[in-house]
Structure formats: C-alpha cells, structure tokens
Image (cartoon, rainbow, N blue to C red):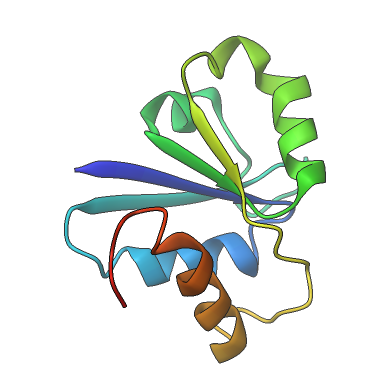
Length: 110
C-alpha cells in the first residue's frame, strides 16, 4: 500500500478532492491536510511521517511545508502539482486535472 498525502491551504477544496479521487484506486491509502492554522484538518507531523508521497498544490505550499516541517521531511518525496485555487470541491475540471497530473506519477493508466 502506497500512502499518498495531499496538501493545500485550507483543506476544503483541492486536497480533500484529491483524497477522495485517489482513494478509489487499488493499492493506495490517501489522506489530506491544510497548511493554514485554521484548515479543516491542519497538517500534523504524524501525517507527514505516515506518507510515502506528499503532493502539494502550489509552490507556496512546498515552501511553507519545508519551512515549518523540515526535520520531518528527510527522505520524503514531495511533488508540486501546480494546481491553483480556482476550483470547487469535487468539480469535474479539478478531478480531471488531478488525474492528468497524478496518475502518470503513480504509473497508473486512466
């Protein structure tokens, strides 16, 4: 089981959508969190330690992650998906974009 962690700012739209979409794929466990103090599910060191691959939605998330959690990121694979905060939760365009960007990285065909 590969463990995938999806991170955005508030954990309201992009990362929970990604968590839901990729939880449907066999062989993967998914979780999501937000980097902001008032996120629905704030990022924890436990979530980082649990994850095999960490996906962030924007470069600013990667920077904030590195700044605030550096000691826990050793040997962690962190991938920036470059998905702007322009989508609603489970919006079809967001789901399609997530699949386009993540599935090849996981070596899964659509």
